[in-house]
Structure formats: C-alpha cells, structure tokens
Length: 180
Image (cartoon, rainbow, N blue to C red; front, side, top):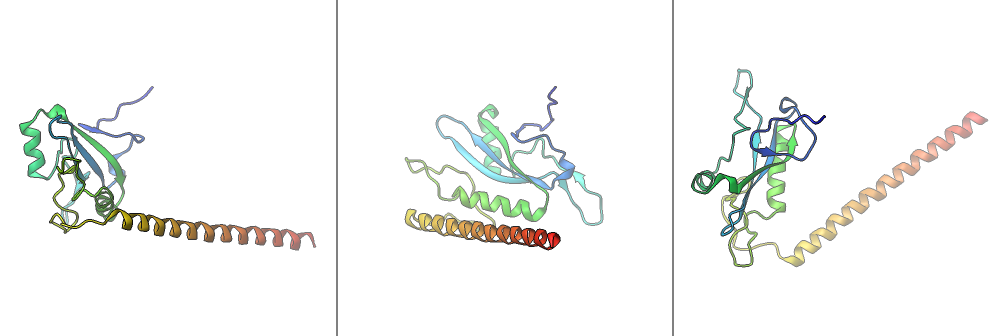
C-alpha cells in the first residue's frame, strides 16, 4: 500500500521524506501557457528561523514564489497552467543556497533563449548577480570546460584506483605476515 504524502501543490519524484529532516528544497516552476511557456528555478525553506525563538513551519505547501512577476502570472493566467516540482532536498542552509545557484548557472537561467529570442526562464538574478549579461560563455568554451571537468573526474578515478590498489597490497601483506 502506497501512502500519499501531503506536499501541497508540489510534485516530487523521490522517496517520501520528513520536512523536519531537511532545511529546504530547490524547485522548478513551469508555465505551460501555449503562447508563452516559461520556467523559474528557486528555493524554499521548510521552516522559518528567528533568533532566540523556536523554528516555525513555513508556508512551503502553498508557496508559489518570492518573485512578484511569477505570482502575477499565476494570478493572471489559469493556475492549472503551472506545475511546481521539487528538484532536490537539502539538509543545510549552505547546501540549499549553493544548490540553487549551481542549478541556475547550469541551466543558464539568465541567458537561455527559445529560437525566437524570448527567454526560457523568468529568473532575473543568480545569487547577487541582478543583470542579464550581454555576453555568454560560448560553445567552444563550454566544450573546453567539459573536457577540463572530465579530466578532473579521470584524475579522481585514477587516484581512487591507486588507493584501492594500495589497500589490496596491504591486505595481501597482512595475509603473508599471518601465514609466516
């Protein structure tokens, strides 16, 4: 028997969770308006923290966005055109903040455009960057960055393989010592 978890209007494809075990989540809001589809990446805390007071459950189940622009769209358009998806849960404030910024940068929320030139995302800032840059990281640089990232992963895998090999050698030496 599957127990349905009360997440308000949020969709979540992961296993059931207890909000008390997490600090918050990053989310994706999708507007599927046929004339103007848009997306928004944000974050929300499960609890409010006030200095010297106990934590209080936030309005996360009904929360839409801190963006006035998004909230106006939800009010002006049919709310059925919007989906709210929890992308990932985070246990710490730092993880939540860094996760949101990482996802926003990875998805190029400030510069990603549809073929007609309209923005894909409604985000107006990432962290403290509150402007839409006129220049983007080009395709060649992205490919170089991917090669750098792959090289770093390979270095890590090589180091791990060496460490695993050293552990095996120690185990073999221990066996030889015990047999003597």
